[in-house]
Image (cartoon, rainbow, N blue to C red):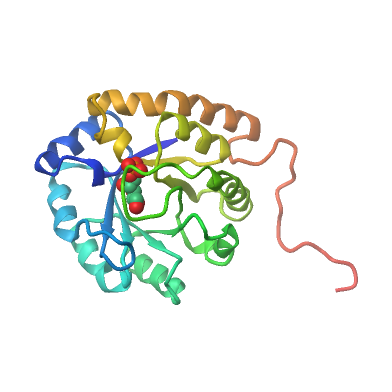
Length: 248
Ligand code: DX5
Ligand code: ZN
């Protein structure tokens, strides 16, 4: 299980210090939320923030683009130090092209889907991506309430990933705290994005991250015990090649 603290909830006057604290406390990657006031009704940050983080952490910098024209900004973020991109299925009529553009930059590619978007839209793009991001709130703001209706979808996507591309990350984003983290991991997530519950509590960043990890890590270990390391059910026969169908 991996933790990706979202800097949207950080104190921007102390951003470098807070990211370093998260790194020391065992963060696996740093999640930056980019919003354009058009794709979502909020503004946040651009590539200069990623560039300012690059020298202060060795952690992978993950960039979540909640913007209308992601293709226009990939190069700038890549030059600034982004290691991976999460782009939305919604509103992108050429998603495959966007994913290929990310790969051509040598970066990890992920597709994000909003709460009202069904899992089925991922079926064709899944072989081409390294990460799937399930939004567990409507994107645009930090500190929103987790939408429990997304849990069944997380389970469906876990099954899809285990079948098609087991090494693909299944990440959740929005309203993740120690309680919802457990639910998401039980449903099949292996990467947790968290803003408010890491940077917006009365605890220190390490204390907050320990609290998040505490419950969820046990569930993650149990889940893998139940399903085997690669997520398949014990005893299930791995699918190889095309199924043979009589008469076809
Ligand atoms: C929401 C962003 C999230 C946000 C999560 O649009 O994509 O990454 O920072 O914030 P919390 O953890 O506060 O819900
Ligand atoms: Zn995000």
